[in-house]
Image (cartoon, rainbow, N blue to C red; front, side, top):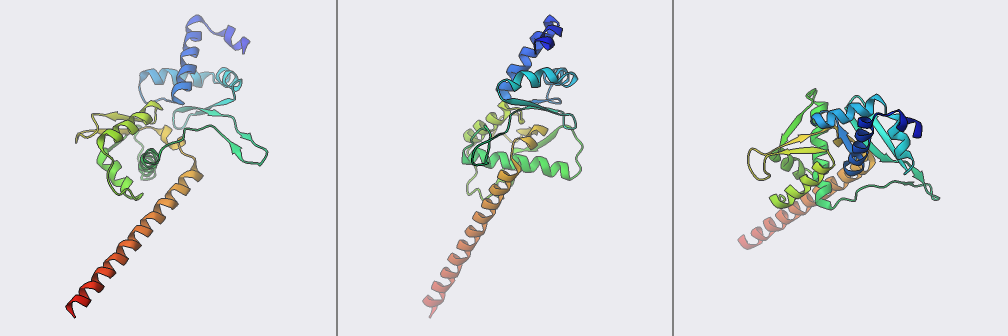
Length: 220
């Protein structure tokens, strides 16, 4: 690491420090987000070894995905005595998980539909419609929605364009979204959401049957 450091110029040392702080703060650097992120991305991509070595001292890996233009900071995998993989991650509340899953699905659907656009933009209405598929009974109020979206903005997953609650508000989805969810955890979440929807539909059907039965008895 000392050899890497001594090979840097003064300006490169400053850039290295700035990028390390950014990765610790927001986990992701997205090449196509803005010019500042683009400069940081290319600085790391030209020579990723010093960053991997530096973060390796504190148990992290620097992952460079050139296809998607994303750099991410991940903690090294550690297997405990019982064989389970131990990883540090942000624990989300139910509403936050719901929004993240919906955003993730919207991004993946656009990619699978053949969208090659670097900038994938959806509306808040699109997001709310997607969340209904996961069994959301009542839409989140705009204050809570704004707080949740601000959380994901902080980690460079999305960018909110406009004010949440206004018709022209749009959400720009970044490719870092596809790395924000563990595939197995997402599958479990979807299965649980689908089961809740089936249970809800079954309950509504039983209530309708009861109502019809009561009407028939009253007519007699």
